[in-house]
Amino acid sequence: MQDTTRMSFFWVIAAIYVLATAKANAEMIKGYPDAIICHPGNSRVIAFLDDVKDDGSALYKPLLAETYATVTPDHILHYQGTKDCDGKSIDQLEKDGQTRKFGSGG
Image 1 (tube, one colour):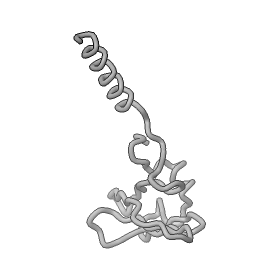
Image 2 (cartoon, one colour; image 1 turned 90 degrees about the horizontal axis):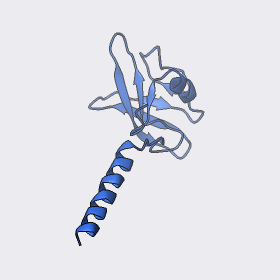
Image 3 (cartoon, rainbow, N blue to C red; image 1 turned 90 degrees about the vertical axis):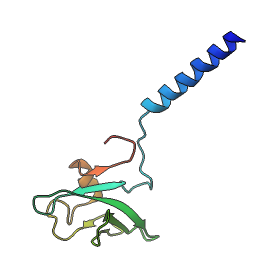
Image 4 (cartoon, rainbow, N blue to C red; image 1 turned 180 degrees about the vertical axis):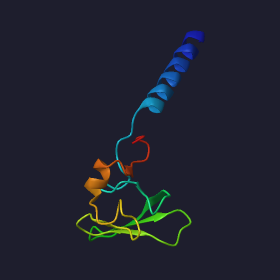
């Protein structure tokens, strides 16, 4: 009985370790990063994916904000007042390190 308990404990610890160190590398919705980081002026805004339409357009919205960024069906972000984001493609924002995927650390 004691050996069974020890073996069960070992497998629980091993499973926790594997799950804790595994790196997720997927967006919540394929093709759309979970968050985008932009700089209006000298501050940083993190806008989170809020809505994706059937036509491929999307909305990103900072928490507790009334403003939002739009993504057109061709994956171009429009976020007024953010020179580092406005007019860039999602691919370019990813290359520039301005996107995040939850759970991926990157």
